[in-house]
Length: 393
Ligand code: CAA
Image (cartoon, rainbow, N blue to C red):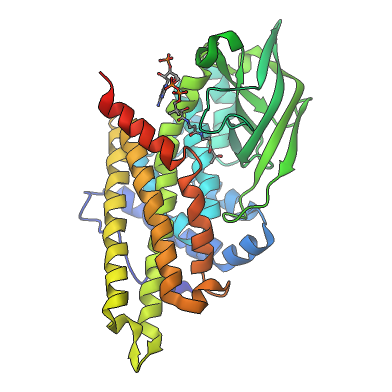
C-alpha cells in the first residue's frame, strides 16, 4: 500500500534550513524506498532474506558511502543529508536502514578519518561506492557494553598480526567483504592495548561462525565471526598500536546518529500507520480517530517524534561543523530509541487485535524498534556517556 508512506511529510523543510540538495536526496531516498524496498520488506522479514538487490542499488545511488569524499568514490555529502536519506529508508525497511548505517557510519567514516592513503584507495573506494560491504567487529561474548574488555588478541609476527578470538552480534558480518576488527595487541595495557585492523573476507583463519535468529530487523544479517591464527598484514592496522578503543568509540559516536535516525524512522512509520488506521476503523458508530483516547496517543507520538528529530539534526549539524558531537549523539540515540519503542507499542495498541498480526506492519515496527535501545551502545551506556560529560572536570 504505497500511499501509506507518503501521505504525510513529517519533515518540514522550512524548519531546519535544508538546502535544495538535502531535499533532493531525501526525495530520491523516499522514491527508492517506495519502489525498491516497500514491495518486499515484509516478505524478506518473514524469510530472513538479506536485501542483496536493494543494497546493490543503494550503492549505485551513492547511499552506501554518503559522507565519503568524492575523491574516494563517495557522494561527498554531509551528515544531515545522510540522516535524511537514512530516515526515508528506515521508514519502509529498518533492516535495510541498519545495513546502510553500519557501512556508512561505522566502516566508511572511520576508514576515511583514520585510514592511510593506501587503505583508503584499497578499501574505502569500493565500500563507498557499494561494490563492497563492510562490518564493524567490536562486540564479543564478554565485551558488549564493557567494550574495552577485548579477549580477541592480535599477536605481532614480522609483517603480520595473528588474530585469535570470537566476535559476536556483528551486523553485515555474513555478507561483508571487509571487516574492521578490534583486538588486544597488549592485554597488560587494558583499553590502551587494543588496536583496530582491516580484515578481508577470504583471509585464512577468518570465518563466519553462527547466524543469529532475531526478534526484528530480520533481513539484516547478524553473526558471530571466528578468528583462528588469522594472519593480517601489519599495513592493515588502522592508526597506531593501542588506538583501537578510541577508534571504535569515536566511530560509534557517529554510528549513534545513524541508529537514532533508524529509531526516528520506525516511530514515524508507526505514527503514520496509526493515523491512517484510526481514520478508517470504526467503533461505536465513529471512526476511532474521533475519540480523545486515540487523539492523545497520536499527539504524544507526534510531539516525541519532532523532539527526536531535533536532537538528531542537532547532533548531525555539530558533526558537520566538526565540533564535539558525542554527547549530542548519545542524547539523540537515547531519546529516539525510547520514542521508537513507545510509538510502536502505541501503534499496536491503536490497531488492537490487528496490530498483533503480521498483516499489519505495526507488528514489524514493534519488533524492529527494540534493538535501537540495545545496539551501538545500550540506553544505559548512552546515559553514562551523557552523565560523564556533565560531571567531567
Ligand atoms: N571517543 C574517543 N575516545 C573515547 C570515547 C569517545 N567517544 N569515549 C571514551 N574514549 C576513550 C577514553 O578517553 C579512554 O582513553 P584514555 O584512557 O586514553 O583516556 C578509553 O577510550 C576508554 O574509555 P573509558 O575509560 O571511558 O572506558 P570505560 O570502560 O569506562 O567504558 C563506555 C566507556 C562508554 C561504557 C564504552 O565502553 C562504550 O561506549 N561501550 C558501549 C560499546 C558499544 O557501543 N558497543 C556497540 C557495539 S557495535 C554495534 O552494535 C554495531 C552494530 O553491529 C550495529
